[in-house]
Image 1 (cartoon, rainbow over the protein chains, first blue to last red):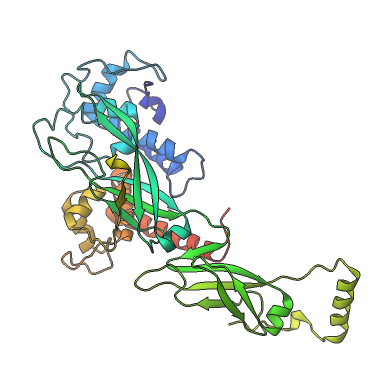
Image 2 (image 1 turned 180 degrees about the vertical axis):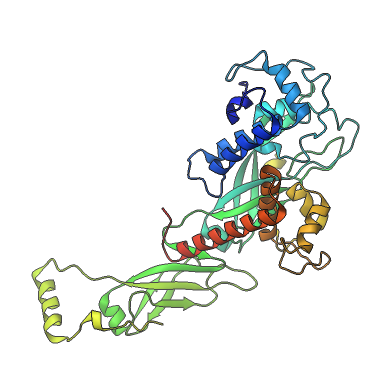
Length: 313
Length: 104
């Protein structure tokens, strides 16, 4: 395990006052905020700066860390000495107000349950954990079993905390929507002093699908049709997430027309609809015969698209 | 091994959380939630904690509010405004995706 220089992480001096630390934190938090940042390593950087701020803005944690930091520099191999935190009380604990699962092994070793003296002798429910899970649209249509890998802190007999991988097989319910949370009872942080474990909350997101787009329970797909199918009408077989359907293209359709298949969106008490958005695709005129057909249309069909407004449903 | 057995997941919107469970999931005090529901910053506008039934959207919003307030020392109203803007951006991004468009 490498020693982490939290002052370096936030870009502040070792004697920086708490307001300056918070100012530096906010500047970086704004840059790496997961909702807006386009930096490829934003999530990791956000974790690092959250961790650094959690230590440096807590006077007790900072004092203990500073004492330790006199002997180490960033990146140096590190193992916390026994009773490294003797004489310090971490009033904030750690697990009840922050998510340790989002922090590093280094932090967990120093300030995790093993390091916190405050809770000794108390019985307390473990903290809840949060994570994101990406699922395919098909999983939402049919329900699925997916494996989620979590990094779980565990405490050894000496009270030191390490992080291990924990695989959970999760049965995803049918009809799950983008942005919904699912709860896995008892899969959060372990309880303290025999307390119940916390819960795990997974925020569901869909992996981008090349064929379908989702809005709420409604699903959208582009359906490419030939000019004669759009003009004359047609009945064609098209795949959908819930199986193939025989779809009628109304005559006189134009690009952009939406065809609704009621109830074929995401399943639920009120299932969504599936929309096919038509896109009329012109065949290329790269043979003599094709060119002749286009020339014949140009000659025999009086049509100026710039004087015609599409009438789509 | 037990940990490899598939675990049943409850959809939050079906398994309504109690106020205590919701507060714990957001790592805040119960009173923090009550104040934000009653002031209309959280929930569907009922403003009565007894009638409030939390949703997945509430959990995402509450965690955003908490982050703004705790990490940026934001005034609760300002945190709510930021959360509103994030939600508007999320909504527009979803509409763009549904229209087959993507932000650069």
